[in-house]
Image 1: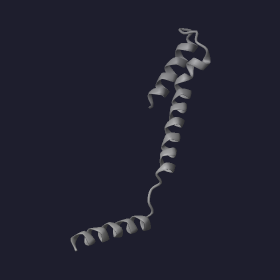
Image 2: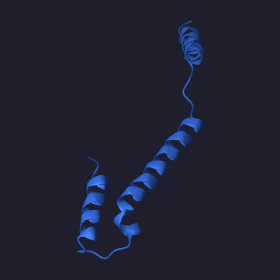
Image 3: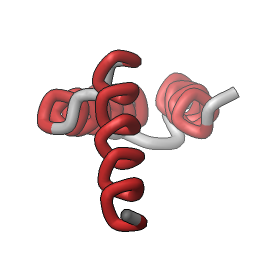
Image 4: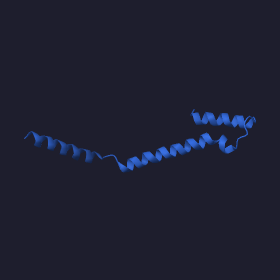
Length: 76
């Protein structure tokens, strides 16, 4: 169980038992705060992948051939 889920359950129980008199926005805040943070993290990951996309196998092979060619030229 995620900490945000356990915290939300605890807050709901406290609210229903009238131990706290918070608004429901604050009682459910662990859920929406976790969703917002997940969205930000996923957005940053997606932006990073877009800025530096992974190379295709063909691009990797071409790069490897160029490196080998440069090494052979240095030796001769």
